[in-house]
Image (cartoon, rainbow, N blue to C red; front, side, top):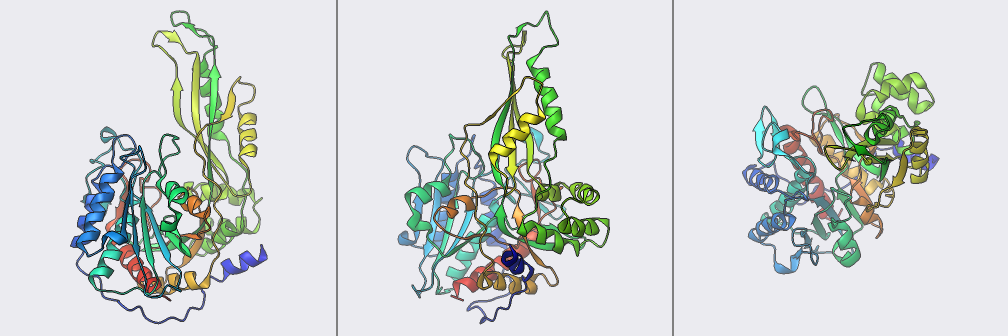
Length: 473
């Protein structure tokens, strides 16, 4: 642990490297905006979308930029005509330099038009923000990665290091009927993904009062998602003769207890240093509380202050939340069954068995049953090493694009396809560069958005970072 903490505390790492072979001021953004718009406006939800169509649209753009058949692999898994994706392989001039993989998913979470203020599948720019499903998760990064490779090819850039880009489908759901594209590639075409390291989603960042980020996050670990069902059963009967013993009421009582459940604080080397460094950005009670809880996770007054922020609360502990309800069988009948699906995000160091036991204790005495749901579950992701050859350039280039903004290692409270890459030994980093305001971003919720400034500045930063790595440094 001391060794890990030492690495985390030394994020300003020495890095001496030559200037990239191709660096220019930001060019006209019209082509990028066209690409981004097309991607956002192509519905890629599980229910009615088509990732294969989106992948073919992106493939056409690569071909127009001069990429060839041998460099483009369009894959459509058998019996999954809408779950296709695209892998781009741009061979470097020096085969002794190991490849770099860029990974982004092009599928998105469901979005109902009647719930949104704007059409979720139209890219709308309004008051300094782009709105639309996928504007952040993860079509911003998919568009930036695609745009970067196209710009480099059109500029006749010659990479020394092989560049790979995997645009995949199926990341956004644990439904067993959905095929995860990254997992399918790992199982069936690992050669397409093989690389020394990968840049992925998961690098967070928060907007500051000036419109610039207050910090940029470097993702070096993730919580583990697990799903449970809480179920009430009852003989039921005719609705004309109701009784208090009602499956829906039983379940509702259990869910009220679940709402009030707080798992204990459990810090790890990454989150401890995260709060230590974040405390410097908050010269107020919150900053003092962050510093205090990093020093003593049992400090209850500090915990109360930090936990009041939903994002920080999720960094502190395991969380479980009811996300789906199913109950009853007829409008004129007492319910015989009521079930809640509960999504838990488990902090490293805890096990699914421990979480299930906590849920059982929480609803004890109500006649409810807690079970693990039969869903695809991700393996635990292994945090990548904080390699100076990778972290150093991230910081040095960030200092140019975001003066005075620190890069802070963090643990993603969500989960990504890094879990699949881990199965074939590819260290995967949640790359910094993009940021948002967690309270208003709408990620997985309503009115998803990203600031225009964040999108374009993130694009410029990631272009230069990828260019640097592609130059073989």
